[in-house]
Image 1 (cartoon, one colour):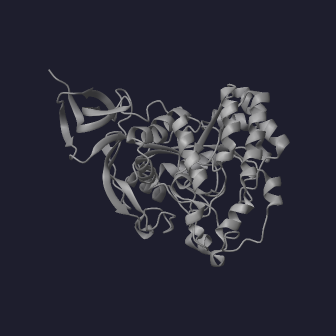
Image 2 (cartoon, one colour):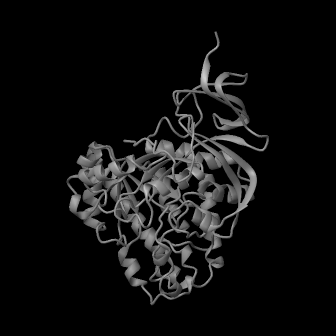
Image 3 (cartoon, helix red, strand yellow):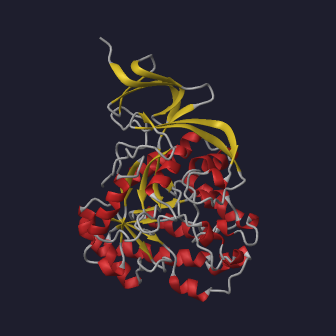
Length: 444
């Protein structure tokens, strides 16, 4: 007798093995149990509309949820609902800006307990590498964090200190000893100090205060440390295309360095940001149009590996305080709900197919994190599926997003591609305030 699956999803266009084709996807116990060109029997049958495609859930490995401690900025309930609305089925949470920061096993357990009661999608955790916990990183590694985030310049919050040059070397040596991963916010504090200015509402002056040199100098230091220690390192939120030649050379040399960039660097340009529009402030900053196009080319060339949101929210008051002064407003872009649509909008304008976008945002991010059950629609993998209408457009209204605070750099922008349904391990997610906290807590 033919198998009967819990759920069968029928799509005339499903992303299977890197290409779109017709498929019936059979799901049992939350796992993709069969993929067939011919009909399958299911307790529940879901057929996609002609304008919809079936894609794997997005895996976002760079998200600041800030829970516990700064839940007025964001929390696991609001963040994971926003993620689900945007087609994201898995996130890795950064070790700041929560209080306590995830720099000890005890702090990790606090965060896991909070997430368990609130997360509607799957959540994993990064640890932090700060001056105070060097020599004890193995403890967090053994507790299941996916790696260690370090800042090379001040992080903006007192409880998460940055590493100086000697401390970076110590962290890399320690992490190399147990085969871990260091993920780095790479800006050089000396360069930043040398370019400090009086701030103000002029966005160009803010960019001048965080020049390309801040990134290139810090990235050169990471490359040198990886060369000496053999540790694996990852460059977070690459903003400056000026760093690409050094990264390209390091990777050609065989050094284990990976690189990410973000939707805001690929969507916006310095030239279009108005005076006082601090919803666009992030560190490192959004640079000019020529820089943006070089980042896109680096993705196509394989010099940048993945695209992640770096969802970094705050309250509306912190974001718009001080009359639009870029030097004083909080820096960070809240983009978790919009990452897929934002990237698809820009990619489609350039003739880049949707399957490439999903490689950068799902397949490659899952592989980067070592999440072997995520990132693709395949037999034996988690049934994390998204029904996506690639030609459906919508206008972003910040006050309608599910992020906790109504702030968005994408406010008023028309985006292409609408998520119509998100399925986590075979179950359709709802994003109302009463959504069930059925997300799994993931370990490395």
